[in-house]
Image 1 (tube, one colour):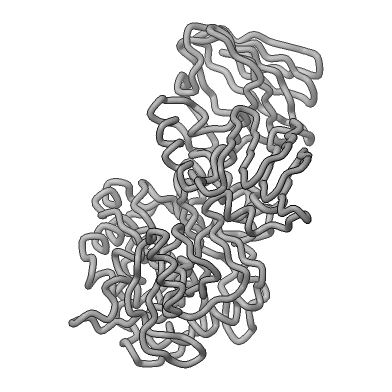
Image 2 (image 1 turned 30 degrees about the vertical axis):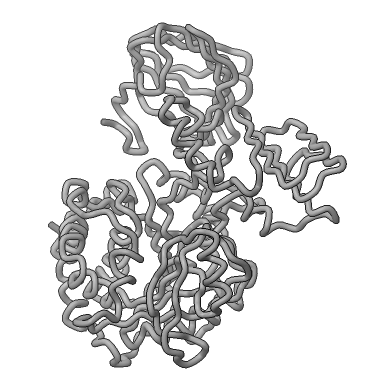
Amino acid sequence: MDGKIRQGIEEIAETMVAPGMATECRRLVQVILAGGSGTRLWPVSREQFPKQLIGVIGTESLLQATVLRMKNFPAAWDVAAEPVIVCGEEHRFATGEQARESGVTARIVVEPARRDTAPALTLAALTACADGQDAILVAMPADHAIADLAALHASIEIAARFAQAGDIATLGIPPTRPDTGFGYIRLGDELRDGAHRIDRFVEKPAAELAAQYVAAGNYWWNSGIFVVRASVWLAVLEQLQPEMHAACVLSYEQLNKADGYLRPCAAEFAKSPSDSIDYAVMEHLGKPGSPFKGVVVPLEAGWSDLGSWDAVWDAMDKDESGNVASGRVLFEGSTATYARSEGGRLVACVGTTNLIVVETDDAVLVADRSRVQDIKGLVSRIKLEKSPEADTHRKVRRPWGFYDSIDHGERFQVKRIVVSPGARLSLQMHHHRAEHWVVVSGTALVTRGEEEFLLSENESTYIPLGVRHRLENPGRVPLEIIEVQSGTYLGEDDIVRFDDKYGRCS
C-alpha cells in the first residue's frame, strides 16, 4: 500500500468543499475517458484500435484533438500541464504515443478491467488529488468532435464556477433535431449564465419520444462532459455507491508505476460494480437526502459525439449533392452519400442515395444511413462467428511499430513488419511455427538461440520452430522486413515471451 496515496486521499477528504460553499480552487485537471470501443464506426474502428485512435474527420486522431482541447484556456485558471487519460490495457501504448506526438505528456491510468465511466472517473479523481491538493476535473470522452474551442472554454468556465461551490456540472447540447442516438437531460430551474438545475436524465428515446422532447424545448442532449471537484466526486460516490468507491480506493492505494503507466490493483478493481457516470451518480442528484446538486450548462460549439457514420457525414463538409468523400472516392449521380476509402482502393458510387460505404483492407461496409445504429448488432454477430475483423485490422500496431498481414493460407502467412528506430520485439519463441525473415530496408539485429548477428538489405535468416529469437532495429531509420511463417498453427497467441521492454511478459 502506498502511504503517500492514502495520505493524499485523507487530506482531500478532510478539506472537501461543502455543497453550496464557494471555496477557492483554480486548479483544473483535464480528464480524458478513452476506454470506448466505437463499434458503430466499424470497419474502421476495431476492438484493438477503436475510433478515438483514428483520424475520423481529419488527419489527427480524435484522441489527439481531445488532448489539445484545453490549450489556451483562459489564464485566470491554473490548467494542469499533464492531463489524466484513462484507457484500457490494450490501448495504452497507442494512447501514450499519440499524446506524445501532440506534444503532451499525460498521466495514463490503465484500467485493469472495463467497468464503465464511473469507476474510470474515480481513478482519475484519485490521480488528480493524490498529492493532497483538490482540483476541478474537466472530464470528457476521447472520441467527440468540437468545432469551436472558444465556445467550449466559455461553457467550461461557467461549469467550473458551479463546481467550485460543490455542484456537479455537465454540459448540455441544445438539440437541433430529434435524435435517438443521444441521451437527454430535462431542465429544471434556471440559474445564472444560462445554466439550469438538472431535473432528470433520460436514456436514448424512441423516435416519437425524441421528437416530443425537442418540441417541448426543455430537453438538451447529454454531451458526456462533466466538470466537478475531485473531492466532491469522491464524496458523492462514497455516499451513493460505497462498494464502487471502496474498490477504486483500495485498487488505487496499491498502484504500480513501474513501467511509466499508472496501474491500479486488478484484484481490488475487479470488485467494483460496472456503471456509467449517469446511472451511478447523476440520476441521483437532488433527490431527498442528497446534499449534492446537478447543474447543466449549455454548450453550443459544433459538438458531435461521432457515434455513427451518419454523425460523421453530418459533421463534415459536403459537395453540392450532399456527398462526403474520404480517400480515393468518385461520385456519379449520387446524393447524400458518405464514402470512405481506407485501404487505398478506388471506391466508385453511381446513383447512390443516403448510403454509407466504407472500405478497409479486409472489410467493406454498405449501409443505409437510416440504419447505422444497427452496425453494433452486426459487429456482435461477427464476434460470435469468431472472425478477426471485429477485433483487429490487417495492419496491427505494436509498441515497437506495426505489422501488416499481406497474405495467408492453411499453413502459411506473410507479414510486412516495420520496426521503429531503437525499438525491439520481445525475446520469444513459438511452439507451432517457423519463420523466414528477409530485410527490405534498414538494418536488423537478430537474436537466434545463442547467436546474435546483423542483417542488411536483401539478407535473410531462418528461425526454426521452438528457438528463442528477437528482432531489433539498432539504426536511425525504420527497419522493414518480410516475414514468412509456416506451421500447423499461426495464431498470435502462439507467442511465449521471455523478456520484453514493454512489460508484456506473462
